Image (tube, rainbow, N blue to C red):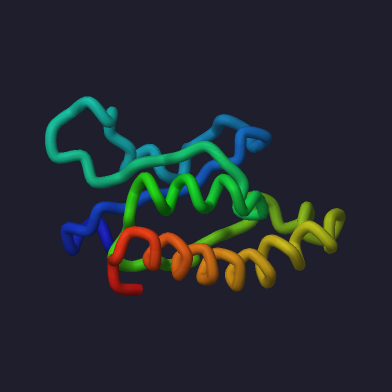
Amino acid sequence: MLLEKGYEVHGIKRRASSFSTTRIDHLYQDRHENDVNFFLHYGDMIDPTNLIRIIQDVQPDENYNLETQSHVHISFETPEYMANADGLVTRRRLCRSDVVNASTGKAG
């Protein structure tokens, strides 16, 4: 796990999602405590502006797509959204990382 290896990990949580963070509560720490390595940002993976803002704020050295759907049945009810979120978002995120890296001078 990335946290166990000392990585600083940033995640995105949709505002429309239920507030339940049961599956990650054991990882979460108040960002005002010392040695915090796990941060949640509100946003949506299909919002390119949101992705740019987070990437510019965080300026990650590495970028992983560990996106998941909270409830599998929702993916069947919203197939267009899921295709966008799973496929196109990955491409957009990589393109946005290149744009941000070019503007900051950081290697991609």
